[in-house]
Image (cartoon, rainbow, N blue to C red; front, side, top):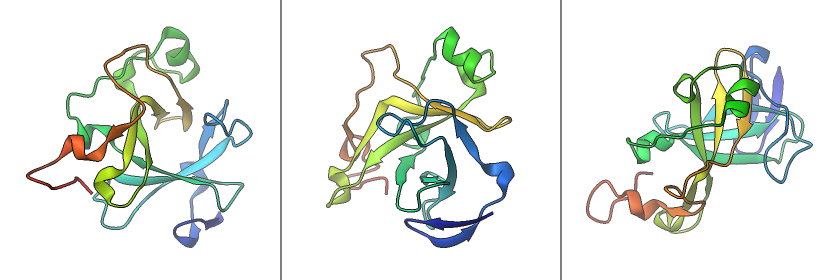
Length: 151
């Protein structure tokens, strides 16, 4: 499938890589299909959820485990059932980002990750039932070294 994208221009995306969100993303419930595209140089940790329907709709996302290796999202039984898995560990997770300048001021939402069943292509944004994670973690919280942001 030839896809017009916000960040990458026109790209070829195999239909089998299409992710289906039965409920859409929060605030974009009408958008049900996305492709997960990697940013060049992001080493697989910096990605983009690109709408399959709306070329200018794309969300920057990160692999939360690259920021916080002990990240441990736990979904409800209903969410696991909807995603056709038995355990949260059977899913891939992505944290949506708000990109700012400087990059260290950007934030990631660890409280409301996108969970993906990479075997079926089913995906869902969830709200974790824990106070451990917040909706606006600054990237600077996850510094790799003195003054160094992970991006």
